[in-house]
Image (cartoon, rainbow, N blue to C red; front, side, top):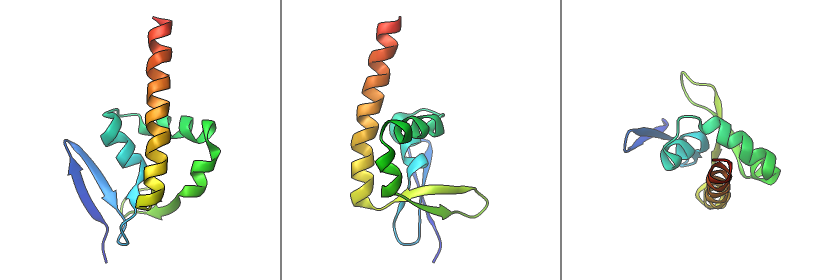
Length: 95
């Protein structure tokens, strides 16, 4: 089986053959930011337990990336929204 590619707006989201979502792709699509790896590093530092929610998958012609099943992606998404809100509030306070 091959990996599946889905586009959300202008952002491609990859899925493994068994249906796991590429976490960095999903963060990019949901946050509409190009530096999803920076967000992932921040999330991983603030909530190290999210790393255990992921597996690693090597897509063709790409580096290995964290992937998560639907249940774990929903947990990561909760952390993501919390993180983005905190970042937005910090940016407002600093301006």
